[in-house]
Structure formats: structure tokens, C-alpha cells
Length: 377
View 1 (spheres, rainbow, N blue to C red):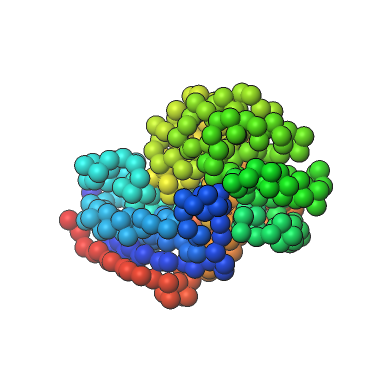
View 2 (view 1 turned 45 degrees about the vertical axis):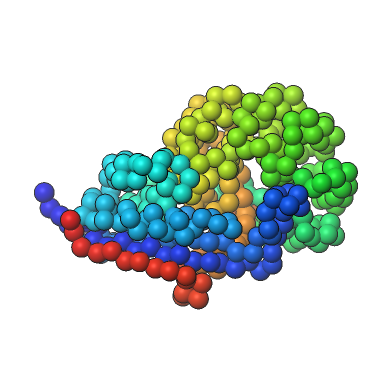
């Protein structure tokens, strides 16, 4: 068999991408975490011996990327000489290479960068955007902004940034809740709803702040506001609690972003713990496991609203049978040369092959580490 097109080189990079300003959510407001000031990104660039290349990435917030980088380096030799189109076989091989550290968390999040690069390469070889390769249903997806709604900002700033987002063509607004005093959440939320009017889609995100009773009280208090969803009202792993809330409230429940293994998301689906499921490609281990989750979510008649990394999720949302929401957070945009277009409340799927991304020259300023592996086994 010809060896043309086999993986000839793999390059990993660890980047610390600074935010324009530090942000705080409920985990910060209640003392569980420090404000977020940067996103750490693990990149994977795969090159074949017939000259094609694919780019993928994973990320962490606050801690973990050095561990991802270390695990990725240990897996690199497994990739050399492989047929990059055999994405599923490679995924299994990488899982078994790191089997002693499990099939979730850091181990699979490192694999996510590789898996995404392989899917990017596969679509580039086909000359198609990733969404088209996967069988897209639409050329744009609904989008909402989150980055302007964090808790460190006074409500006047939140409303001003919301207006700016809508003027830029974004279709919905999400704000953070989950402060120590729920009354303050309700005050801010009422002010934002009054500012936006009743017709603008509005979501809230509690970042796992409440116990079951508090979440139910909040949900009942905001029923009249017509929210698109209440996100992560409970601990991310409390599938039963989320299911009870979803059954008790008219306002939909959204969760799933913090789950890092397919079985965790399957349990959430089976219990109907989310009206909007929020899988995250880098956290759940890559596009390959994400597609398994999405198929099960569609079978269960659920909406999907993938978390963060809009650069990847715009393609996957376009390939989901039900019209999805994609989260607009611009934090990773400086890492890439390309920008996503937004019109009339929708994010446009790029028409460039693959993910349609390339690393910007300025990314070198944020690189903390790099490693390259080449040759054939």
C-alpha cells in the first residue's frame, strides 16, 4: 500500500492568550476561583508527506494546559506514519496509548486537539468546510454573546455591551447570575430585560452556583421574563437535579459544558436533564466523541447549544438537524488570522476548507512551549 498522505509530522504548542480584561462569574463571586485573565490553548498541527496540513486545538481555564501538553507529547509517536483519514481508528489508538490515565479529563482533552486537527485535515483534503463534510443543514447558525455579561461589570456596562453586540448583528444576550445574594441577580436581570425589551432572546448562566431548592426558587421568580434558558443552575454532575428542574419549570434548562466524557452526557440525555445540551468539543475529547453525543441528543429531540470555541462549534451546529445556538465569545480570535462573520443574528459558516483557520503571526508572542515530532515508524 502506498504511504503517500501519511502523517509525517506533528507539532504541539502551548499558548497563553490574554483577555482584554479579567472576568468573574459565580465561581469567583463565591470564592471558589480567581478571576479569569487568560485562556491557555493547546494547538496541534498535523502535516502529511503529500503536503497537506490540519490544525486543531483544545483549551483550559486557570490550570491544566501544561498537563495536556505533556500528555500530547507522549502520544505523538503513535500518530507518525498513520493514515490521517482513519480518524476513528486513530482515536481508539490514542485512547489505548493513554489507557492507564482514563478516558476523560486531561487525557482526552489532549486527544481533542489531535482529533480536531485530523477532522480539519480530512475536510481540507476534500476541499470542503468541515460543516459540509459532516453534512450541514444550514449555512449559518443563531448566535448569542456572553463575554459582555460577566459579574464584575456594573449593570450599566452590561446593558451597554449588550446594545453593542446587537448592533454588531449578534442575535441574543447571555448574562451571568449566581451572586451570593439572589436579589442582586434578579435586580440586574430585570434591568437587562427592560433595556433589551421583550423580543431579544435572553439567557442566564449560574455556573453551578445553587442547590436544588435555590435553583427552583430562582426559576420560578424569572418565569415571566421569557428566558431562552437557565444555564448550569446546579453542580454540573447533578443530572437528577437538572432533570427535576427541567420538569418543574417552564423555562428551559441548559447544561453539559463541564462534562468531560461521553457517558456523563449520555446520562444527562437519558434523564432529560437538559432542554439545551451544551457539549464542548475540547472538554469532551474532540469532534469524534462530540458527534456521538450529538446523534443521541437529536434522537432524544433535544436542542444543542455547544459551549465556547465558536471557531469549531459553528461547523458542528450547522451540521446538527435542529437549528442551534452558538456562543459568541471573542477571546480566542486574536490567535487566528480569520474572523467569523455575523449577520442578522446569525454566525456565518466559513466557506474555507476545514475549520478555515490559521494561526496568526502574533500568536508567537503568547507561546509558552512547543514540541515537534517527525518521521515514520
